[in-house]
Image 1: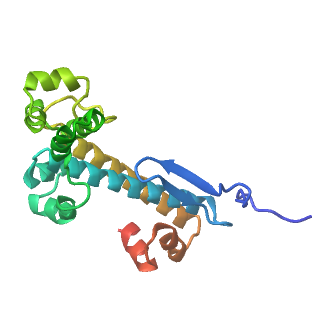
Image 2 (image 1 turned 180 degrees about the vertical axis):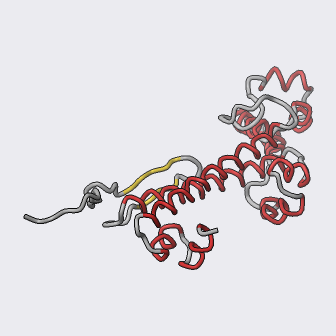
Image 3 (image 1 turned 60 degrees about the horizontal axis):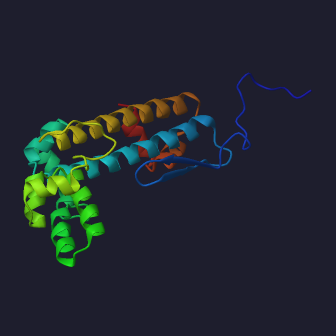
Length: 219
């Protein structure tokens, strides 16, 4: 009779071929055939952290669009103004930069109600005030509120109240999500090591070199 160890075996039939994490970017994780459960959990945790970091970039772009300074964004992220600018300076000129007020002007010029609605929704998501939207549309603030007043201010789904600091709260919430994801990744990496996985294997599933994985999770 073949002897077996007390450790539960991880077979290919147990490992899902694809795990869709959803969220921004629609990240998908492929479970390596024959890999142990610890490596699969580490791969998923690592991809969750990547997804959370993408959300931070989106929130920083929204804060910049809402006219917040690098000093304010740095305080929300609990880093210095200089560190915030170095980390996210590509957002300033990147494709995520807000153009919603320009879209409102163009939609009004084209007499396109549907495009006006979409542009105002984008402007409200970027924390623009009704005064700014009214000026872009060439109407009074009262008319703007009457026409589009049902559109909430701020990014949908984040649940922050209206207010000038709402975009900064979104940045802070996103930063906290990254920190939580990093803790989960660290826990999974240590579990993989405890299960006998090599630094080569851990680095491969997290996109790091053996040396990089060792340096990150042995400190």
